[in-house]
Length: 163
Image (tube, rainbow, N blue to C red):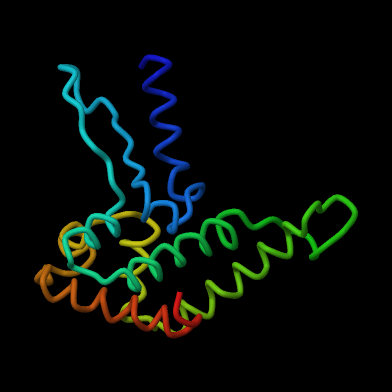
């Protein structure tokens, strides 16, 4: 793997957490990467952005999904042991982590145990609805699962206020 390919892979992994949703609205961020040994290129776009651009979910629902991802990335995946604040905590980073973790729990509890696996897989793991249906949805029809995802994202947006 060349240095350029490694940089693109790293950019893809970090893109969602570093680029705000408002900036994406005005200047879409798409990462091109090599997809095979023949040099074919593929445009990579997160599933929620793709669904929004196709009209499958509303902009409000896409923002709610991005909020779920950001709360998970900062509050759960980025969580550290320790108490909030402190001398070695510039800018209240731990406070932000605690707030994100609390918001994540509020959203998860509001969405509920039956819809949460679908919302988590699509928002955090960046799975397509079809993939979720095949691997975790017990053969559910993707059209029905999209309706359930819309419901879960609406509930998430309502739980934290219109995002």
